[in-house]
Length: 157
Image (cartoon, rainbow, N blue to C red):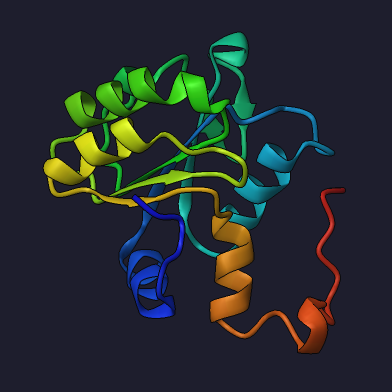
């Protein structure tokens, strides 16, 4: 298992993805999980927030769900903002809840080889230790020389 991915692999995932369930999203606008989810929503993805501590609240026009199993619509990607040791049950729940799931994406600093192998055995692509916001910006021309964005991206409303 590796966390080295080709640009073609990451581009294919981001182009085919429409609906992303973000597990561990924060309601706090300065937290990375908040501004990554907000950014993805602004880029046209449907973002379904998942956080049991805020279930029933509204975020980015969606109701926050307590768990993946509460989501009734199809999900293309599950983006995990939780510690690595929390990944296996999240992957198990995702595989159970979404028979057509295409991608499990684990954020920077998050990886779990056994859970990744389980998902891959079911035909699900896995990305570990990467951020879809950063990869989107890098692959679709929003980052300029030196990795700096020339526009303003803010977590402030």
